[in-house]
Length: 311
Length: 155
Image (cartoon, rainbow over all chains, first blue to last red; front, top):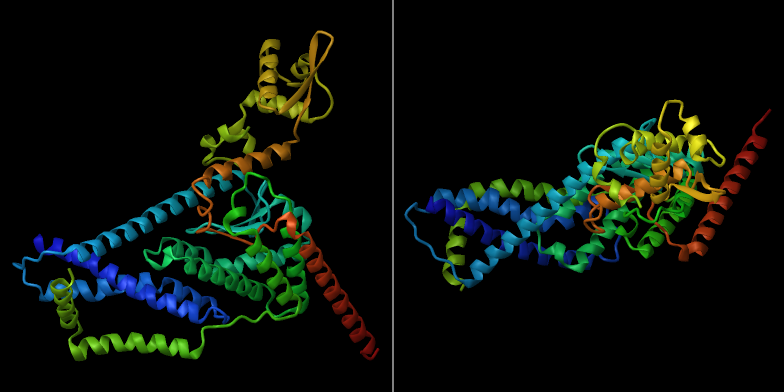
C-alpha cells in the first residue's frame, strides 16, 4: 500500500518535471518555427508534445521501473521542491479533467439542443437561428447549417461548404481540438501556446479547404465565394461561438484562405520525410535503449537521484 | 426573453416552439401568425375547439407579456397582432439556448465546434468587399478562359 502511495507521488513528481522540461523544448521549437509554415500535423504534435511526453514517461517508464526495482519496505520522504512538483502535476491533471468533463457535458447538451432544433438536410442538418455552417460535436460530429446560410448560398457553394466540414470530420479535427483543450501541461498556460493553436487552426482550415476543392480551380472559387458570403451573414446576438477567436484573427484567416483559393494555392504542407524519420527513430530507439541499457533501471536510479538531491 | 426556456430543452422533436410554449399558446400563435388583427373573440372562433373566452384572453395576455404578440385598444377590447414571425422566435430561441449551453465561458465551444468561417465584424466591411471583388474577378477570368477554350476547339 505504501509502495503504491509513493509510486503515485513520485509519478506526479516525474509528471511535473518532464512536463516542465518538455514545455521548455516545445517553447523553443515554437519560437524557432514562428515564421515558418508547418503542417497541421507538426503543429499539433508540437502542441501536445509536453503532455504526451510526460504521460508516456510516467506510464511507460517510471511506473514499471519503480514497481520493479523499488523494495516494498522503502521509506522515502519528499522535500518542498518535490512536493511542489507533485502539487503542480495534480493541478494540471485536475484542470485537464475538469475541462474534459465540461467539454463533454457541453457537447452532449449541444447535441441534444441541436437534435431538437435541427431538420435533416442531406448529410447535414438545418438549424434556424444558427449562423453559418459548422461541424459540432466531439463524439459524433454533425454538420449544422444555419437557415440564413442555406438561403444565402447557391447549391454549388453549399456543396463546397459541406465538403469543407466533411474534411474536418474525416481528419477528426474536433477531437484534436478536444485533446488540445484538455492537455495537462504547463505549455498550455503560456501565451505562445495560444499562438500555436491559432496557427494549427489556420492550417486545419486551409487543409479542409484543399480537401474540399480537390485541386479544382472553379470549385476553389465557389468555396471562396461561400466563405465571404458566410462571413457577411448577420449573427443572432446571443450566439457564443463568435468570440472564440478574435475578430482580427478571423478576418486575417478569412483573407488568407480566400486569397489562397482564388490564386489556386490550395496545397498544404505535409509532415515531411524528416519528421516521419524522426518519429520512427524515436519509436525504435526506445525499446532498443530499454533492452541495451536496462532503461527501467536507469529511470529508477534517476528517481533516487531526484529524491536524494532535490530539496 | 427566451432565457427561461433553456432548461426544458433537451431531447424531443424538431419543433423548437414545443418546449417553450404550451399547447394552447402554440395554437393561439398559429392563429395570430395567419396574419391580420385579432380580437379575443376572433382567436376563440379560429381555434376550432371549445375554449373558454377567459382562457383565450389569459393566454393572449401571457403571450403579450412574453413579447410574442402586440396589442392595441379598440373601443373596450384589445386587438392582437403577431409581434414576431415564427422564424424570428425560433432563431432567438436557438440563440438563447446555445447561449445558455455555452455560457460557461467563451472557450466552452472551442473543443467541439469548427466553423466554416468565423465572425468577421462590421469593421472589416472593406476587406469583405475586396474579397468579393477578388472572387468576382476570378470567376470572370475562368469564364473567359472557358469561352476561349470552347472557341479554340474544332467544330
